[in-house]
Image 1 (cartoon, rainbow, N blue to C red):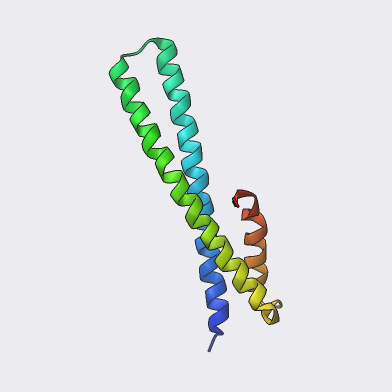
Image 2: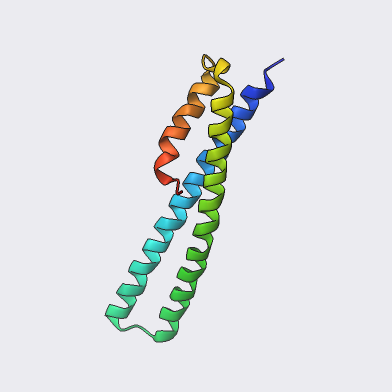
Amino acid sequence: MADPRIKQLRIKSGILKRCCKEKISYEKEAEQIQEKIKKMQDEGQDVYYIKKQDLLLQETQTVIPDCQKRLNSAYQDLKALVDAETELEEAEEYLAAKTVIEETSGHITA
C-alpha cells in the first residue's frame, strides 16, 4: 500500500502547478486585451466595441486576485506538507514537490 503522504504530495503539487498556470494565463489574457483596446482606439473603431473589450478586460482583472489567493493558499499547503514530511525526502514525489515550490515561489505575494 502506498504511503498516503506521498499521494498528498502529488495532489498538492498538481494543485499548485495548475493555480500558477491559471494565474499566468489570466495575466497574459489581460495584457492581450489591453493591447487590443489600444489598437482599436488608435484605429478609431466604434466606441461600442471598445467598451465591450473594456468590460472583458475588467472581468479578466477581477479573476486575477482570486487566482492569486488560491495560488498563495496552495503554495502554503504544499510548503507546510514538505516541511513536515522531511523523512520522505528520498521519494521522487517529495523532490518533485520541492521543485514545484521553487518554480512557483516567484508568483507568490505576501
